[in-house]
Image 1 (spheres, rainbow, N blue to C red):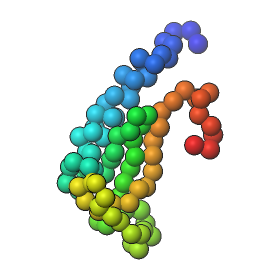
Image 2 (image 1 turned 60 degrees about the vertical axis):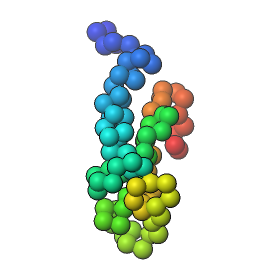
Image 3 (image 1 turned 30 degrees about the horizontal axis):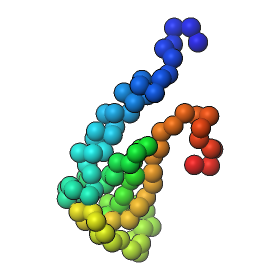
Length: 90
C-alpha cells in the first residue's frame, strides 16, 4: 500500500518491545506483587493466574509454586511472528 511503511523485523521488534518490557517488570518468577502474572519467552510471553486472580470456574484448578514467586497456573501464551509463518491453530 502506498504511504504505509513496510514491516521489517526491526520495526516489529520496536512495536512489541514496550509490551515485553512491561511483562518483564511484571515477571511472575521474580515479582511477588499480585499484578505480576507474566513470563517472557523468546517469541512472546505467557500469562499465569493465581488463586486470587483467575478465570471464572477455575476455583478448583491446582496451582503450584514451582520456580515462581507464588503458586500459579498457566492460562495462555502470546507469540509474535510473520503471518505466513504461523499456522491458524497456534
